[in-house]
Length: 309
Image (cartoon, rainbow, N blue to C red):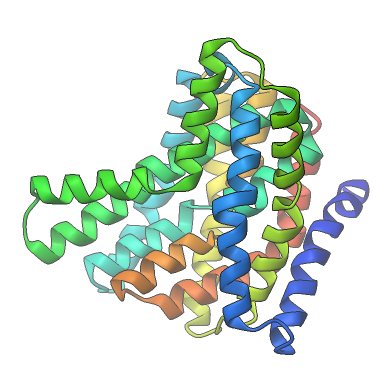
């Protein structure tokens, strides 16, 4: 585990540097916002397009993989929602807590870190996990909250959901990359170098932005944040591991990547959704802060385990 910890420490050191810069106000919330936009719309999109363009759909899509990941996620999601409802919170808050339990920081942390630590062959499984998180669970939270508030489902909700997905640069870049791959044409050398150069900024930029954004997080509702962090860092990878290794015939290396991705801390986009809908943003903020801090040890242990597959 120690060698893996030494490999993961630089990633978390970058997060820590961003956190200190944010706490010292050397990097203001406005600066963090603009850095996040640069990573989200440019650097990370370039990285995802380049990965997808150099992979075939067969290297990304696998029905057993999808079923295993969805099964593990659904089990933990339902558990988190059930516990929330037992505390007599609203359906909207329960849905947000469910998101915290299963949506990891795959885009900003998982893609750059897991591909570097687990090898280029991890790119396909990581992209599949990211696609499921973005398409399935981001859609689910939108449908639940909008449906509860309007009292019924309508075509307008579906249209709004479609527009939101089409405007997400991570989805667009992955689809565009796979579209290029389907043509069978290689990415031209200068274009590939441009994408590599721009995509290279995704890792340090994303990690620094994560840290800087954590500097503005509050740690209210500690007991709920601790429970949701436990769900995300322990129960989620455990449920996914059982599904991938014991229930569905997932290839071992891909299963390892899936389990490591499931062990990532709560994603920042859950906070964006919570803030947008006005549903428990402080609770989500505390969960992101706590899970990210604890994941220094938990993600290291999980990666050390899956590298033995």
